[in-house]
Amino acid sequence: MKSAAVGESGTTAPAPKLSARETEILRLVAAGHSSDRIARDLDISIHTVRNHVRSFRRKLEAKTKLEAVVTAMHRGVL
Image (cartoon, rainbow, N blue to C red; front, top):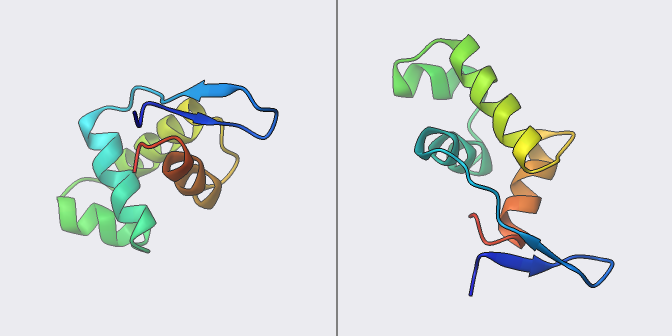
């Protein structure tokens, strides 16, 4: 089952509930796209991209986009 992963302490962390748009942007971040490129490609404002990034970082308890990507991969979100 991909909804939880074993953390460093040996406990399982449930996969957070990301919106479809948050997941889409997280996948683009994981693919190496910049926030500016994501905004252009999705025809949304850079502020909207930043809001989604802030939201998925909070949900994944990540300090950076890179940490969010790694955490999402470990928890089965990506």
